[in-house]
Each structure stands twice: as C-alpha cells, then as structure tokens.
Length: 236
Image (cartoon, rainbow, N blue to C red; front, side, top):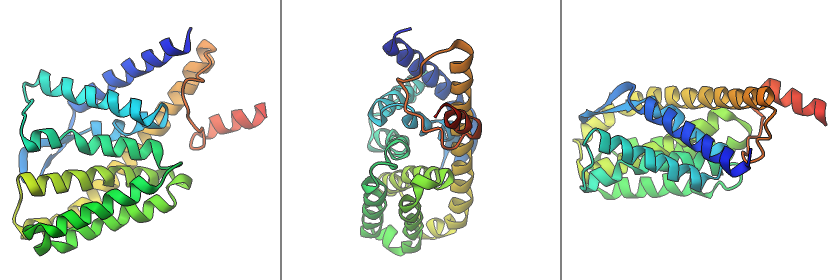
C-alpha cells in the first residue's frame, strides 16, 4: 500500500478516535460549568509524535470544528475561537519539543506576562507561577515521556487560562483556589497522554507486524515501548 494512502488511513482513524474521545467527559471546567474536559485531552497531543506536528494540528483542528458543528456549538466569539487553541498548542509541543525547545519555554513566559498584565491576574499572581513547571519539564522532556506529556498538557493550560482570563474572567480568589486542583488535574492528564502514546505506538507496531506493513510514513521513536525497542535492537 502506498505511503500516502497509509498516512491518510492513519489520519482518518486518529480523527475518528479523537472524535469519540471528545464526547467522553472527564470533569467540568471551573468557571464555565457548561464546558467539560474530555478524554480528548489524552489523545489530542499524541498524533503529533507520529506525523508532522503541523499535519497533526490540522487534523486536530478539523476534529474540533466537526465536533462544534455536530453539537451546534460553533460560536464566532473571542472565547469561541480561543477554545480551539489549547489543544493545538499541546499537540505542537508534544511533537516538536524533542527537536526544538523554544516553543515550550516561550509560551509559558508569554502566558505569565499576559496573566500578570491583567488586573485580576495581577491579584492572582501565584497562579501563573504554575507555568514554571512546563519550562522545567521542557528542559528534560526528550528523556522522559511523562515530563514531555506534562509539558504538553501545561501548554494547553497556559493558552486556555490566558484566553479565559481575557474573555470571561473570574475573581482572583477563585484563581488562587484552583492552584492545587490544577496540579492534580494536569498530573492526571500527563499520565493519560503518556499511556495513550504508549498504547497507540504498541498498536501500530502490532499492526505493522501482523500486516507486514512498512510504517515509514510515521516517525515513532520506539523509545518508550520496551518490546519495540528490543525488536529494533535485534535487527541492528
């Protein structure tokens, strides 16, 4: 089968999986109880590790638009448009951080600056200090899958929080109260991203062996899947 066809099949299956996960709620968003975090938070960033990050975020954007159209929830407001950005930031980070760490540092620094420039953000200054976590994670993300996942989910958090602050806003005391919740929430999301990545990579390797397919159109590193890593070592 032609590599372009295989890539197309992968994109379709990834998009369908993302759309399914998009409809499985995990928890509601504090301050916007009509919005929920879903299992899409786990699978969204992962695709960018297997294909071009740009191509992956294009697929994710397509999934988000289709989901909004299906639910008749497509709003051309500032917040409505901003809602697309967090997952795109997370996906690009997850796919690109091993080769380019600048994005993982610039976004949190810019986020902190924008947060503190807002009057409410200035009162809740401690909240933005959470974004030192993805900066530290970025430094060693290439060697640790969990930290790579943590950095990714925090990129989404930075973008989403700043967008929420400037479009909807919440009292400063609520931002302060969210700090421990965010730490728990992002740790869970990072674990979910890590597990999803390992699972998807294992499935791809299984399919490749069963169908004797060359998955050269993908760029998995195999580093975090023991059986794949051993298999490669034997070949070498």
